[in-house]
Every structure is written in structure tokens, then in C-alpha cells.
Image (cartoon, rainbow, N blue to C red):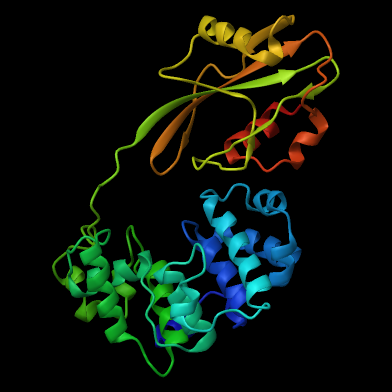
Length: 339
């Protein structure tokens, strides 16, 4: 906490104990670094200054503001929970760890952060920064991504927490992991805790924390069909179901088992109802696959441009497509292609 008082960053959510703003920052910062998440936080606060504003917004607007952050279920859960708080709790945010934990999309870490920072409840946070600091300092090699690991580190963090000032302690231990005990090449020479650090003593900084490799990365081959009609229209479709990018928009998609050749795509295009019997030309926009890496799968992506020599009553005007919430993969293409 002494180190934190000197080294903490000046971040907007540190100047408030409003649970709505703390919750918003914590959801954004899951799976996201501060420098990337900060402009999103500012955009959300600017567009939705109260939880009622967020609750009354359309899902499309929420997803559009979230565009580029990934893990879009976070945004959908955020929106759903804002409606619950606004409508069922009359806008009064839950004030205990147990009650906060009931919100959709909120786990142990987020509930602990809000309960301690906003309501001074002494419940310890355990995030990646805390796992790393504790595992190195105490020399613990229990894998952090196991149920046993969670129990070990949660218990340890709870034993260490300053019960008189849990908000400051939790923020300090997280900041220490983010700025001092960094994942790669931390500067241990200036670390105030080096004298008692097992990993420093035993030269195990790079070995800790231990994380088991549990997921096998799948390869998928995506072929997006970008239609351009004579009357400046294109087709966008909304993804349904519980897979990636739920409720976001994309160009029509043809998924193949391996990299698709032109002839294969041409044949599949002729089966599309919107193109049946129409005169069109096709060319491949990117010869080299654009590889989009998600946590459990890598998408090998090609964009196929289909030009129609006639009007297209269906679809949307090309100058409207930037209004749609889209995955960053699609968003980057839209900017690169520069319709």
C-alpha cells in the first residue's frame, strides 16, 4: 500500500466510489489492458452517465460502442444487468459481495472489487496480477487455472487483506502486479518485496505462475461474401445463436473445411438465393488469409467481392454499414476496403 501511494496511475475510475462506474470499469477491463480499455470506459460513461441510461439503450448501440473489445458476451451481460438494477432494484446497486455476485456476468473477482472499493467489504480480489504476485512471492506452483489453485490463492489473498482498508489494499496488489511484478522481464532490482520473494531467491521469475494448457485451438475457414450492387447496396446479416459474435453483423458467410478455391466459392455463390439467376462477377480481395485469433479458435479469413450488374432491392445502402455493430475483423475490412 505504501508502494501504491507513490506509484499508482491516475485513472478515472479511481476518483469515484460510485458502484456503477466501478462495475463498468471492471467489466471492460476483463480480458483487456488499461490502455486499451480506457477510451471504451470514457465512451460508455459519456454515452450512458447513469445506469438508467445504459438500461434504456438499445443492444445495438451497446454492441457498437463495445466494438473492438472482443468477448461480446461481456457487453450483453452488462446490458442485461443494468436493466435488472434499473428496473428491479430501482437503480440501487447491490451493496454486498453476495448480492453483487448474483448479477449476470459478474464473478468472484468483479464482485470482490466492487464490494471492497465501493462498500468497504473486506473481500479479496484475485485476478491475473494477484495470482502472479502471490505465486512468485510465496513460490507457489499450484496451477492458477484450476479449482484448487483458485482456492489456494483466494484464501491467501483473504488472509493478507487489510480489513480496515480493503479498497486500497485490493487496488494496490493489482497495481503492483500490473506495473512492478509484470508477466515478462520485471525489474526485480527495484522491487520493494524482493528480500522475501521466493521466485527472486530461487531464480523462478519466468516459471511462475504455473498455468495448465487446457484448450486445443481449432482452425476455421471463413469466406465473407461482400456484395456490391449497381445501386450501391450490400448485404449484412446478423449472427444468431450462442456462438461467437452473437447479435453482431457480418457479410454473408460461407464456412469451409479447408482454404477455399475460387471454383468452390463460385459454385456455393450460385446456390445463394439472393444471387440465383443473377449476373455477377467475383474476385478475391485478399490472396493471403487474414488470421483472426480468438481464445479457442483461429479464423482463416478471405473476403470475396461480388459485383452485381443490376440493382439489389434487398440489403442495405453501403454508406450505412458503418452504423452496424460488427466484429473487429469486419470493421477492419470495412475501413481497409474503403467502400
